[in-house]
Length: 442
Image 1 (tube, rainbow, N blue to C red):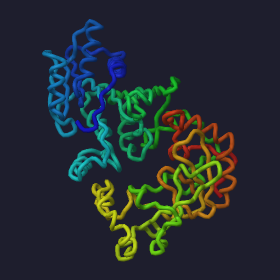
Image 2: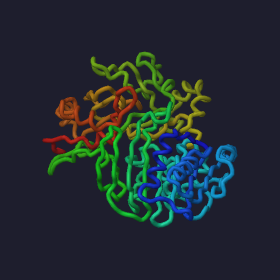
Image 3: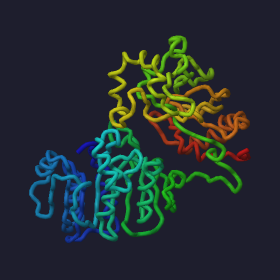
Image 4: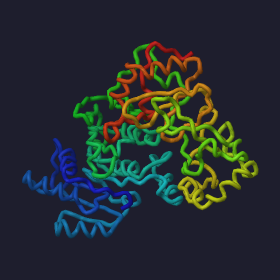
């Protein structure tokens, strides 16, 4: 199965405990592992039943990779209550189940064919925006659970707060999300996936227990309208009455431009050929935001107009001549192959009308939050930089002072997602919720 990552035994045992917590399976119950691989969860459930000295339920293991199914058969051996099937869970009908446990595959949209994308969008309400297959597994699993059935999946945490995850959050809110358990970010050796174990009871209702990576826990009511859960999960202080968050005084808080080929589209400013200077904009990466200020030594060559519209080839003659040397590399980019975009297009059309305004910049990953001003609004930030565009440039100096102050620093250190080696991720989802006391949106 594409995107399959083996679950460490200790995590598998923890998930089995959650699956059967307060409700032991009966011999007639049916349990499904929809992406069973070599059968680690199945072995864990059998081991749990032996330790409790009870008969096992009926267990079905599915995997689209028949080679893994054969390995599972060899590892588990003959067992009258276990059925292993080489089939695609998302596309088949396997009946109803009382319990479901699994580690769904992580397969991003870019790795799916055009035909697969069209099929999934037609079949699943959660196949939205830049969906990942694990999101569809949630939807199919919840639809295959019997009323009152329980699901325990381990997946990346991103569904909790991304735009892509909105339909899934709406779907989950129709049931009882019993628990969200954020486990150690290095749990899957060699991968930083920010894994999360989600436990859902189909058709139930009630508050959600949230266990954070630092070991603390809270009980909270999750929003049911599809809005991001991050604020609730993190336990962020909400703005007091009349107090604003950063998102309330900004036009945009976003990650910078992803060209898909910075080595081609970015070059030193003094090396830009005269024929290409009309397309050149000053640019910075995260490494060029330093204690000495903005080190603006590079230019990005942009085939877009000031509104963010892709220029037609007839207006790019010099551009095309220059980049013809790199045509094979540019055509092979994911955004071109999978998105059927022009050979010179970027991953997404940059919102130039917002980018070319006075703004505040920060690194996407840093030891501590720090912010820099682009007072002239001429810099195009690269994808390792976030940019913050105030509603009016008049508040920029005061806003910059606040962002670099103690109160904002401590809030961001407490609420931003952790990266490796003690760094933090200054993602837009956190930046938007930063309280800014004493500000108004004028």
